[in-house]
Length: 277
Image 1 (cartoon, helix red, strand yellow):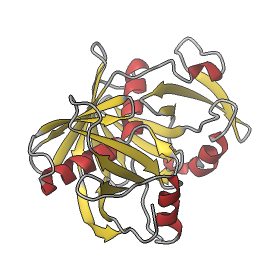
Image 2 (cartoon, one colour):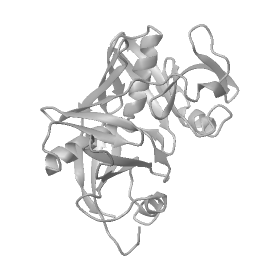
Image 3 (cartoon, helix red, strand yellow):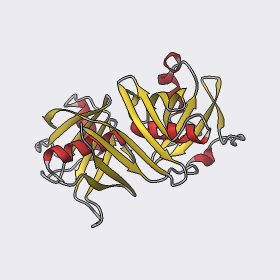
């Protein structure tokens, strides 16, 4: 992106997860690794992910998007960003439908606009195998023991387009998530990085979650990690199909239908303002 070209961006919050949306349908330009880094360093803007909105590459889709982390790396999924996209699309009139399809690489988001500023995103069935071969041999519960900072912990793993490792434990706000998360990036188990979550079961229908997101660091909320925690908690029989995932800034409602593999996240999105990048 040339420095002489300015693009309008819209900033949103998905439960504290800061998302920049750049509409490349209503305006001409390009977003890539270099332009994202420029936005962070020269514009000094703070966000977790930047999502560019593009015309669909497939006639069955309504939109396509590309997702960038704040370090310029590409992300394959962003559930909070999907809900922010839904609000932008609805408020701007970009699409008049209450249900639409968005291409995200090889994946598809099914997005629904509800009342009271609530939006939901439905994803394809999770992949329990992609990337799993690098981990130590699983135990009888299909979990893996690894060592972080000389401390052995047992994690569960799932791929939702992006990889997630969840450590089900207690007192999650007393544990060194930042240290552990950094150590796991580029480790022998996760050479391409990992979204690492600390999950605490509060009840069969509620869990608390902290997340270190690859390319970002600890984030106030992570929708795909919330989905991963519920999927894995369900398979471990720690929680039910409908679970409220509690972050410091609010709750995201996740529904995982194990028999069909259907996975849906529902919650609010907040518009924070427009700016030029």
